[in-house]
Length: 508
Image (tube, rainbow, N blue to C red; front, side, top):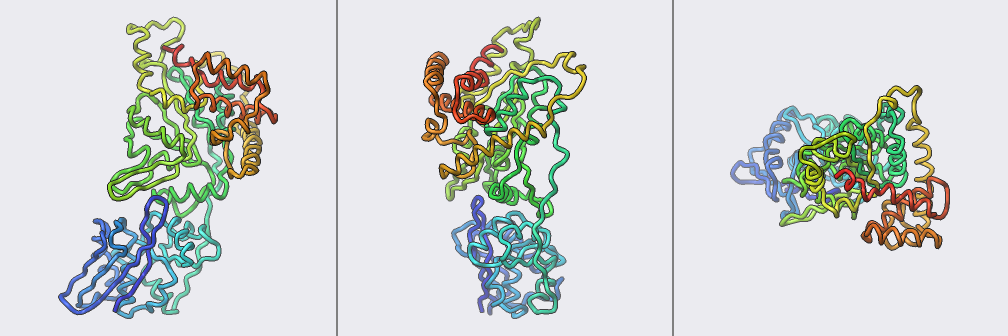
């Protein structure tokens, strides 16, 4: 007799259906799993055997063959334990096999029969809903799965015994409720930053339009402090964005207690991070920091200390909003619509360009340090600002500066203007930084004076086509903050000054 249980295999954020076929028949006593299983799936034999014994069942003294179809799709992870165990139980008549047909099953088994949480439950639940099936998952993952659809059937047992009793009718498992983490109240506040008024203005503009930002300044000027306050200025995730971000976090196993959060992610990898850690990859092609920062902020501190090839690997995600990981036998795509914020010193000692500072190596030190960042990478950064050292007068000044709440309110108004504009154009919810090149001229309309000014500036600064468009998008954000429908010459002038074509050259 062959019993069948449906589970999933993950390819990026997509959950592909896998048919677990179990046959218990005559022959030499053996327990075999076929269908391209990895080491974790192969070891499930012992976990399943021990869990069945702990639940009062024993494997029959027969030949047990488990086939994971399609056979040419690699199977990875420990979530195949539960569907294999249920398939065996159905094959030996311990539970009704027809009751499993309406569910997608995943979960890891402990030796005592308890179910341990697994990664990827949220995309598995969305995949199950697309197949018009319910979901069986560990209890700790139930709140996560409940977000997929309010009407789909979800069973979240704590042990194999509980699930068997539910199918027998001696115990009823209630549907888990979706859970959301409380709003983060401990986000750093912009009022903590003393001085740096021009940098705060740039941070507000970056938050309003989703623009990439580079801060250049000496050590201790407050660059990292400013970057850490950007999440407090950004609006919460929209429902669709919340699901997209949570699906990636679920695949990475970073959803604690199955709770989702509507706060935008903030990722700050160390400068020793590899290319696979930053854009994704590895043996199982897992999402990297760029994908984990989807719809949020990726902060790269000490930018020139990153390996140049690692930085250049971000050029595609910054342009297309996704990372593509190609392997010999498959291709995985993860979303990576990020806002990049970077900070760097002007040279290795960090004090190039400061009054009275004399470097023994002269301008060569700064030039070599800054050359680690390629021109095409810099061209994708909209705002490049200088963050000078804070003076004692700034630190001793009485009172506090404007806080995140008031600045965030202005950012929210500007983002709402952009949302309505781009939804009217059929582009969905977008920011100015994500505006397609084909619509830049239509959205960022200039008067004759502004067009003449931008043409002269583009020629004198030798702006690339990408740089020209990014200046227009930045001007559009400045106009949105001012509540104006058109981009004026003043907006373009400020956009060009914030783009800072000479910030690095002056430091060198």
